[in-house]
Image (cartoon, rainbow, N blue to C red; front, side, top):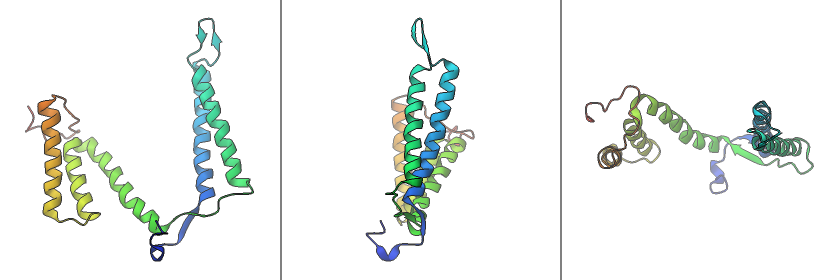
Length: 172
């Protein structure tokens, strides 16, 4: 994105090889966990055939070996990619989407899918899209009203209403 607007580029945050090493380390840990747990389940061959941990063991082994190779290449390889992975301007744009999405997931737990989605859509349109309040609220209510009628009334599939269930007066 900084290539599109070079004047908007910020201070470099990290390089590509550091991100590759971090992701490889996370995958290495995940692969080791899969190996250990599949051995606990029985990763060997039994009289009936493969044990319940047989296939997960080999998948975990492939993940661990591959991620270890990527980790070594990212840290010690001759052709490490030292290009800037992300700068502060790009990180700010990513966080402007990621943090509201994380808050939305938490809001779904409390207020349910319909209310949280309506607020999320409206705020997303107002803050990031720079739409007017009236248009944003109208779109948020229309989308969630349509989803409400479609799932709750027509398909008879109730969606999650949340711990507080703010729509309990409308649905009976």
